[in-house]
Image (tube, rainbow, N blue to C red; front, side, top):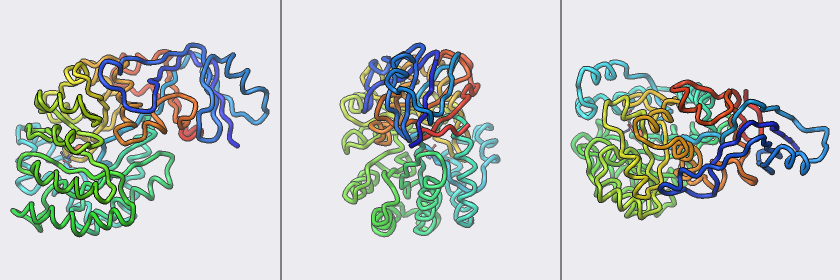
Length: 414
Ligand code: NIG
Ligand code: FE
């Protein structure tokens, strides 16, 4: 058995629980001082004061001991919304957007998601795997120990299935837990130009059954947006996917308010994501549902848009999670430090709320809150040791990565 003891920790800061925390209760963080954590294999067994934990562990000779004096410890972060697997880059489009060309215009002109689709379709399985591996290794350095990844740059049978299989392989081979989402309806591919209904039918009849049969995805997602896929198309696809056992996520109300947030609540989606333009009535619907609002501050920042109304949503009792949305178009960033800084400085979340949103609630947004997202006995031993003694430095040291060590499944990665 692999035993790990982290002792003399200056401060542990963690949310508590096995499910998403709604509203201002997100501010309740448990703090331990002069504390210790004992893990067996990949599971946390005991958390408490160093004296307490040492007394319960007794004297074993085969324990790996880490001294964390002067350090703060927080749960491994979860990133519940990424498009981390793709071919090529889109720097030219980034520059065009800075010069004022709207994101949806680039997509309409055959660029955007379809640009990356072409590059991704042209890649071999090995090339795709190696690109994903490199990104995940960098994301682990940002403290992400659990990551969701979406397909959506194939928009055909072969590449969509390949993307999901590649993510399964990355999950098996890298020290990070990956949850997969089928985003076959990310944009309308050239083969179905002007026939988005035909493309939704193709996705439901041809691709989705294979995804379900081979157990390739936990979730189904769709880009529900003006000029992309409508509310009716989104509901049709997501309900078809639910029938095959895939839970729902929605890219909702990112650019135009079309009611994606309300649809998510109505069909009991696990999450509604983006919500920059969410309406007041949809905030109420989300607040009264189990659907988690996944907010993506890096995307708003990179797109020069107003941030999602996080403060209002929390005060109305929504459960908020934070994620990167890392992708080659709207947001080429997975900086955990910048996510936290924007959430607190620009979106007016408290530091405690932001910590809950990037740990326990982020885990809940991919249905993993019973397994990870907090430092408690029985949870996965996914733990971050910070260079600093206080978790508030995660924001105070703005945009700076202060993660010194990452422990995944009870193993010290660095
Ligand atoms: O969440 N909005 C749709 N999908 C991504 C962007 C994907 C891309 O531009 O490649 C997002 O922002
Ligand atoms: Fe996205």
